[in-house]
Amino acid sequence: MLVAYLVVSVIWGSTYLAIRIGVQELPPALFAGLRFVVAGSVLLVVARLLGHRLPARGRDWRTNAVVGLLLLFCGNGLVVWAEQYTPSGIAAIFVVTVTLWLALFDAVIPGSPARPTLRQVAGLLVGFGGTMLLVGEDLGALRDADWRGPVALTTGAALWALGSVYSTRQPTQSGPYVNSALQMLAGGIALVIVGTAAGEWSAMHLSPRGIGALAYLIVFGSLVAYSSYVYLLRHLPPTVLGTHSYVNTVVAVFLGWLVLAEPLTARTLVAMAIVLGAVVWVRGRREKREDVRT
Image (cartoon, helix red, strand yellow):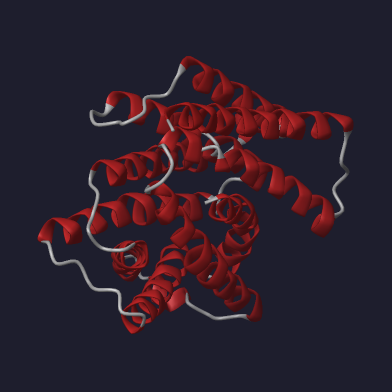
C-alpha cells in the first residue's frame, strides 16, 4: 500500500510538467481524451488476458462510468484546460485543495466508515498552509491570473474529490484493474466527444514534444499512477489519501530545480518540511488507530 501511495504522490507530481508541455502542442480535450482512451484500452486488454472479469452487475458499470466522468472527464479535463491560461505555480495552489474537498465530502456524505478527526483536520490545514508557503512567491500573481484558470481548477478539484468519495460509497465486485480501465474509457471517450464537437481535430498536429508528453501521461500518469489511485481508494480513507496532493507540490518544486535550475531557498525547504510533516501526521494518526483496533 505504501508503494502505491508513493507512486501516486511522486508520479502525479511530475505530470503537471507533461500536461503543460502537451497543451502547448495539442488541443486540450483531445490531448486528455486520447490519453485515457489509449491507456484504458491497453489496461482492459491486459486485465482480460490476466483473467480479470468484466463487471457482472449493472450497478458496477454505472459506478465506474460516474467515477470516470467525475475524476477524469471533469476533474482532470478541467486541469488540462486550465493550464492553457494558468501558470503551473498558481495551478498547484488550487489543485492541492483536493485534500480539503475530500475531507469535506467525506464528512458530509453519509456512509463514511471513518470520519475525519480534529487532529486529521488540523494536519490537513497545516499541510495546506505549508503548500501556500511553498508557492508563496507566486501568490501575488493570483490578482492578474486569467479567471478561467482558477475557476476551472477549483471546480475540477471539487469534482475530483466528489468522485473519489462517491467511489468509496459505491463498492464494486470487479477488480481494481478493470475498474481503472472502465473509468479511463468513460472519461476519455467523453473528452474525445467534447474535443470533436469543439472542432479540435483540425488543430491536431503531432510533434515530438506533444507525442512525448502524451506517451508519458499514458504510461506513467494513467496506467501506473491512476491504477494505483483506484487501488488506494479501496484501502485508505479519502482524508488520508488526499494528502498525496501535498507531496505532488513538493515534487513539482524539485523538478523545477532539476529541470529549470530554479533556486531552492530556505523558505522552500521549511515549507517542504511542513508539508511532509503534515502528511506523516495524518497518516500516522490513522495507523495508530488501526494498531489499537487490532
